[in-house]
Image 1 (spheres, rainbow, N blue to C red):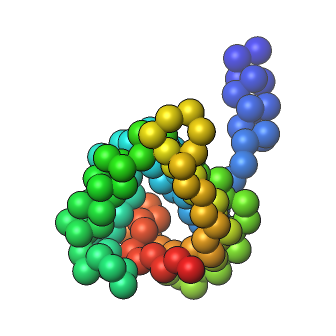
Image 2 (image 1 turned 180 degrees about the vertical axis):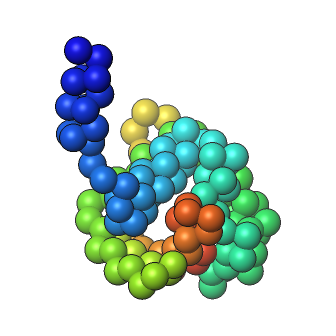
Length: 133
């Protein structure tokens, strides 16, 4: 009976494709931002990370800390993500709405088109760069 349940459960689970793993990482980033969890967020960031505002991981971490201090409540909604994978590199274009505030009602809400670069390191997809408009 136990073997049957294991086989049934395994058949229903989604395969661990690269697309699926990247989407999981995006969800983890979203949760880390909403939970103000800098450690969980930075665990998904590649050692060689950089973007137009942050030349390295440390600069990104400082920006994230400032964001967390500014907004007590943060909500992230990823409405669509198109993923393009080439071997161990991937590009994801997402539509994202971020809102934040000091109280119950958000003081600020913005829509962004976010392009993220991902690199597969030891079987795990890590965020390598970000660009937002």
